[in-house]
Length: 479
Image (tube, rainbow, N blue to C red):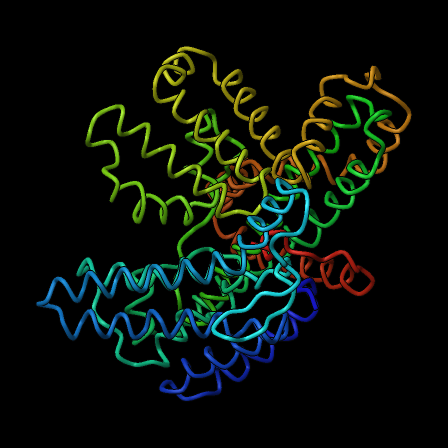
């Protein structure tokens, strides 16, 4: 079974919130834990074992580090064991199949059987079926052990509270990546205030609207264009397609993040922000300061800075940056397209640091924006393609390899999807935020009263759409 139903998520969270609000304060984390396990089990029951193992590894690692706080050798050994075991989980389920396929391809025969995967003697499903969100919950859980070793947080002795942190179902499978330090205080003591619940509902509906009304619509456009024969796809059609995917992945992922942050607020938690209008960026470095911010912060805190960051000279800075971006590509997926995607961004960010950033500083903002968006869209072609050959063929279409600049097919797609494309482009900017702020200044109180009406309308539209819609996948659930 694949996690793809917004209807299930909506019904599940409605029931969970009802139980959560009714439950006594001392049982609320138990409700979070049980609901997280149920939520994850619905996707693929056997793989909940992987999440439980990861949780137990880091819970006991934290206890041992705390118990032997004065013995640096035991503390370091415990940290190493925790990291190795977590990464072994991630490697086994996410990358062993990729490595085996490449070994078999090089050998020209099946040297490594990838029909099944075994871990701790347990036989799981075919290795190409990934535990949902494994990259998210392993990174999230590992952050606790690393921060315990650094002495940045206090030990969590209560196993239910720690397990609730890992299994917080609102952001369990697609982020934002919530580090233990982000919500340590709220895990033990939090208040559920009415204004916070209201903010959470508004944020949740905003995310739901992004996902259902925009991402799903432009996603079907992208799927249509991707299915066309590359030899006859015009340049205009290819550009329409990648613009659609550029909007889809943003509204899909940021929509889920908004829903998770909103649901967190409804439950008394404040999760970190994950997006800040990334498509307004004027450089690649700025884009990654605005896109999937919790992942960027994770790699900075636990890879880039420990390697020395930018404190050990230019050569070491370049090396550290290259390592981070290679790992970023690998984190996203077990395929050469993701590795090349990560390497591409690493090279671009290094170039901007060396010389290109100074050039961009002297250029008009609109040229810097065009430069950024062109490279981002080329990157999304790599990210979305099943293999490198398909990606380069699609890029060729974008620049006229078919010999057709525009055709009736492109005009047809524009006529049918023009409205949602325009809405998506507008919503991907901060224009609406500026309009709201100016309206509030000129007509104080109007936004306060209009917001509930607007969100009710968005919720009604989403509900109507979901009644008949079958296209509801969250793109980042596969990571």
